[in-house]
Image (cartoon, rainbow, N blue to C red; front, side, top):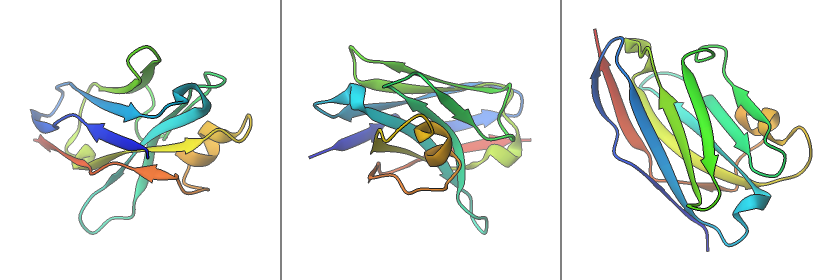
Length: 130
């Protein structure tokens, strides 16, 4: 059984930083892509970033490029999302999600919301005040 446990989010002032982590109980962690998507009230779900452990490819939404960085620690089976330059429009519930690698387009396809993840965490609230 796959479990994804996100770190606690929080309240941040605009321009500030926050790092989310996602601890994955996956036996074959290296065969998975781990990503983050977010859901804000009244808005559609948005893929934020994705990291493919198999080939190291990444995906970032245009809205977060240059501000957010996703990374993976295979030894700890944990994926991080470093968020810098936070804006009020980044306020949302952030979900960690995982899917088995299916080829070179895995990160882009999952991150871009073109294919559903296989497993999703409980979500964590991130609030950015102006």
